[in-house]
Length: 239
Image 1: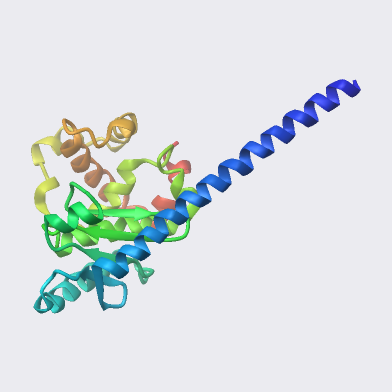
Image 2: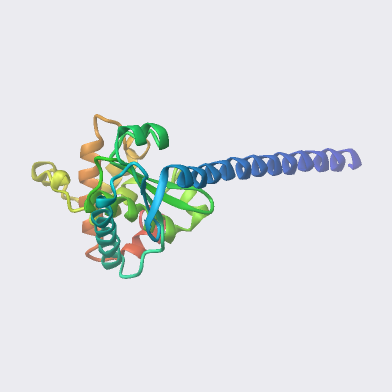
């Protein structure tokens, strides 16, 4: 009996040591990411308005247009979520050289998050209200889920809800294929389909269809539920 207790105690001690080691490594990695962002902010960017940073290589006469675009994107989110968007740093790249140096993102823009902060990187060809509003939409999902719950996103939070919400403030007409939508009118069946595709959502072959169906599914749910309710109760509404 005593030997069993010792074995159990030793196993628990190893378990806690592994957990502490994991937390230490995670904390270390997160801090590296954050310090890299701060360092790059100081080296490559200038702040033209609170939380809005542009490449130092960008001509100064771009500043007013950049500020207007970002502020319109924020206002669009405020109206949709019926609340003020929490501040988020927005980094605007000027050209492909900036992309290579700073982020290497291959899309128009990207939302990034760590345990304590989040930010948006906008590529040189993504400087418009729709794309920035879309990424700020992801930020609002992040804020409503809370940090720890958001990071479960990669495991169980439905990507189609995240992207579907972001597309409600993104007014591009790219994702309004009427023929496709006419074949997927049943919302229950559509949600099941999107859940099955969660792990392959961004696959090139199906990504357009997934985005289009996600936008439609969320817009349908919004007829009876608020954005906050859909985000915070996804595991109850759509088990």
